[in-house]
Length: 349
Image (cartoon, rainbow, N blue to C red; front, side, top):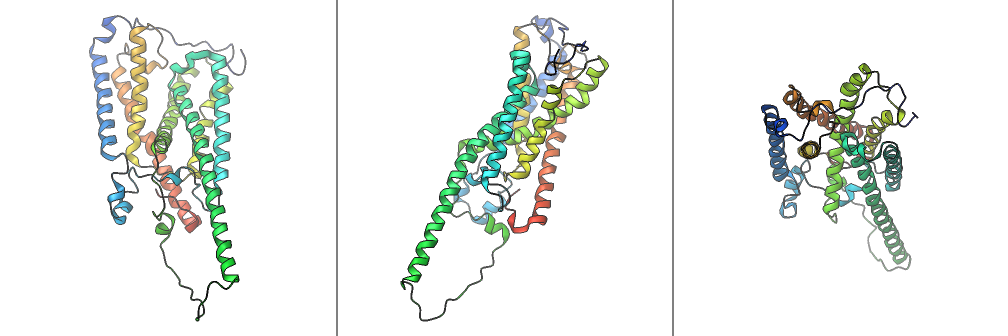
């Protein structure tokens, strides 16, 4: 076997532990408790989304009230494509997103070519596909943003030339010498002046939501892989291949680079979408196994296991520190960049 699919030493493969299509597999206390965990997750998700998502009629609020909502669901269109530092041209963020998109797409295609459509039974591939979509959509948004930035810069240059031309022709007259007025404006007010700024549209919010879903899902995927699955596979004398290792490392590298460059906000309540993403995957697996007796992609999802409720609860609780790690990373970025770059840093956390 080659570098993509593994080596001939691999002796472990997923196996069918029980017939998942018979009623007795589903009508028991283990499934009931796991279903309670899933319903609780859905209820929490629905509450957080309905309570905090969206700008909440920010146009009708005062400026002070808007400032208080910067940690909520408010999102402006230019935050989608501007880098967090003024000295960085938006084209650099575009270039980064394009490189990440094509690298991830190539790796996903190679994995699909090696193992076929069955790869999408795994949560890893769901998450890897999601982050690929994120960088693809981000590239399109950055292209649009670079075009708008170019138009704005060109317009400003033309306006400045017209003013200078009028002054040279004597159109501007004054009997007094020009007065220079010093305007003191706080960095935050200057960076985030809401005049002439558009709220993000539907796809802008989708883009930000996918970013935050990826933040939790990538950390969860890599943690489960390296700390749970790899030790299990090692005991089974399974050799990991290059592609498998790469897919569980390069995803977080690209996401951390994106987080360092962009100026997207990171409101805490969007952990709800992270829970929702995993819940949808689990429900998909339940529906698949109720219709077809097949192997479980992850042993801890197998409902025939006596400890299944404990596994499901543990994985659910693991979402909190996995998302919390990225929240901490964003806080550290905000704190460090604010001190290092001062007014050049214009990201609202």
